[in-house]
Image: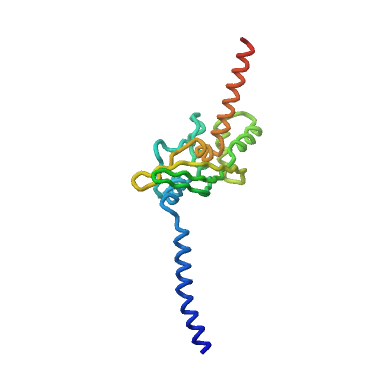
Length: 195
């Protein structure tokens, strides 16, 4: 009798366990928004990816206006080393915002260290050394970026922004912007003292 009761209890629990497993696996499946964002960020990290990317408007500009900095494989290599994690998503009917944590090489720190060791300044040598350094151990920097997405034809399109581009550039865009602003402020101050 005890054996039969145990069998009945076991048989009753099997559907409950199966239902629990099914519900857990369903809840872990990414939403369409999360999947589109993940696919798009993966493509930005890996230009050879076969996943679809959904970018609204102009593609993400991770390159500097300086023709040397944006050329070659260095920019793509930096982007390929970026990792990301979607932290939070706030979805509305046709728009959404998502917080994304990104970790990328600290390119500005690497360039600072390389230039301090260069005997003679050369952009080609700088970029070559930077590319070599990206193959070894390097400092990283974390970014938490809020991105906007738009729902278009059943897909969520990422709206590029400067913070995201900066993270994919390894922080170089922000540093050059800050340095440029410091130069402008210094020139304005000098102009005020002259006049």
